[in-house]
Image 1 (cartoon, rainbow, N blue to C red):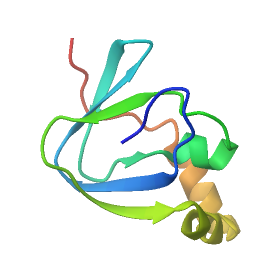
Image 2: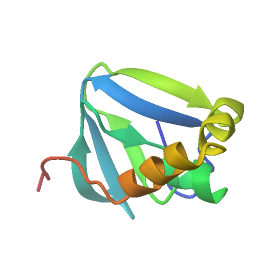
Image 3: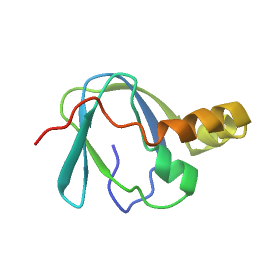
Length: 94
């Protein structure tokens, strides 16, 4: 889904399944239903700060760069996405 240091070309809004988010080869959290992946890279235009790997089959709504830019051109949506960036998955794994 995302690879640390590489720009992400998609926003993923998970509708089912789970994924492990890690940074510097250290597990950080598990994300699932309702969580978004790829926001930081798309908003900031740089490499992804984290790697995200599916732990199970994932179903997600996705938006490419052009679609994402269309969404964030709307101030209310940009504010909601920016607010979602610090949101972390519901549980961590050791």
